[in-house]
Length: 454
Image (cartoon, rainbow, N blue to C red; front, side, top):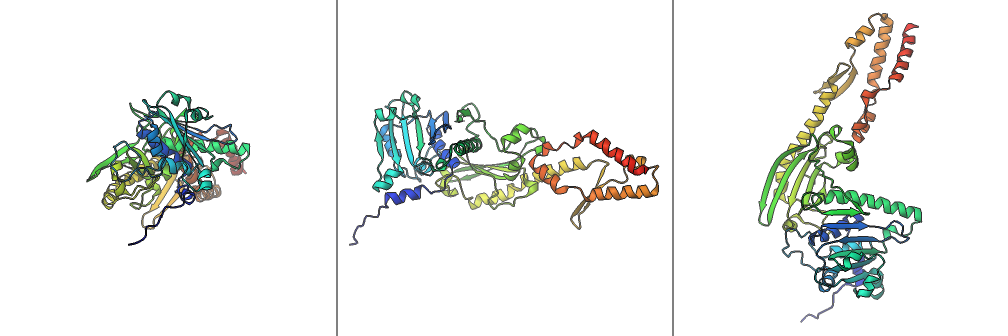
């Protein structure tokens, strides 16, 4: 009979693996917020006090909390079976998110919690202690130890909820005071944008959840710009499977020249809006994939207003190969087939939006657009048959007319196309061609008069 051998991994080696699952700060905190939402929290707060020499990150919610027994169970690694059926609103999956997300960013995790009918409880993991002892040395806190925690949210002592405290954060270590303040401020700004986008569906409607970063309530960032003038909804489709249904909706964003500057700025600028075309996959209303076509279509500059919204329940995690971080998925074959077909619609509509805008802009008497569909070339020329130009040059000598024609042809050849294209992509509303400096034009006009009269 084979001999039984203890195959348990070394804790100090295992913890290093858990620390490197692949979270960044944004996805790690998002995973913690998933737990808060699953606990039916209506207010969630993330703060990183900026004036501390050793910054900590505090994540608090007013959800239903945990009893001491539940807390100690949830502090264990992988405490839930990922194949176990969950409630529709449960954003968790592997039962390890709170720990692995925390270990990826901090070397010490303190969790304080209280339910409506239980006493406050607390426990912590310290990676330094795990490595020194090579054991899973989870520490339980008594009430006095909890009350003496400097960063404790005192509301939790009388109300239900949960608070996580991340200490010894490598991201913020080994920096001078000025660099540390900048790093914290930059990280919190990036986090605000990330959470405002990925949890925007929870931050809207009658039952909206309030999410705060650095004590500032976030405003939801809708990637489909619903309600903005010119936004369009395209075809919708539902795919029914054994474990749940997948809903697919298509959206076409308005051309950026029609979007308010404040909205463009909130989304990170026109370039961010342009480059994030593609699929937006939501798992139980939480955004997982934000843009990109995942192989069902090619990125197309004229298709950059196209968006496809896909909503799936948590019960389809196995079919969609949801990873531990809940930040990546794989499209099932059946869904890919539908997406290739329905995804063409918003892409073609996006192209039409750009082409319509282009036709509006070229419909004038000052420029000629010569498009050769056989050679697939486009040329932009100053219109030499313009009636105003003919009137202005009626009394010029033949030589001066030839010189002016040559000048206008060179003007056409030297159109700064690439600069215009770049700036239009970055900030289309910033191009104010109809606000030309009249004084400068008068100076140029005087110089031309002198040139023509010599």
